[in-house]
Image (cartoon, rainbow, N blue to C red; front, side):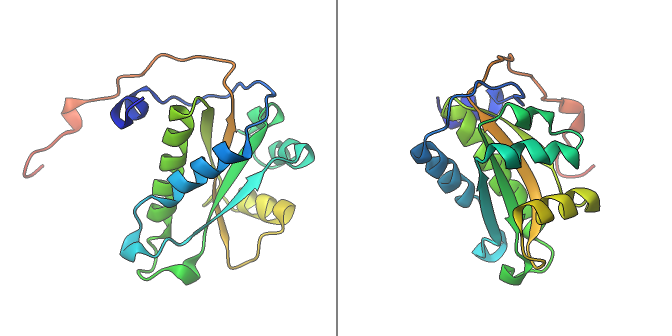
Length: 169
């Protein structure tokens, strides 16, 4: 699958088989995430790989849209580290790019995934921080649920020419 096909055909997948995702596949996902652009090339991110069934099952207690984690064999938490920034405030964009790279790589490797927002909702930030013992200086940004898909969705054509402006509004 080429890059454009992966981007255009990726969909949010919420149903997974219980098959474990091999460590070498997880490493490829993380390498893709860490290849994202970042302001000043500072790469102000950290990643927490979650495979423990008890941890995955605990997250829906404080994240209302994460029920699929009860089936998922894996999740990756993308975290921002403002101390690593060269340009203040851009960690959010940097972590967004890393999250999107991770999702596209997952799709290209035959996995399904869905982006679960954590930041800026304080109850989700606090819940995930407490569960995973994340230091106060690190900000849990997004959780990506991952696994081998048990559902298939057709590509969605989201191109809308009415949202395109050339040279000015």
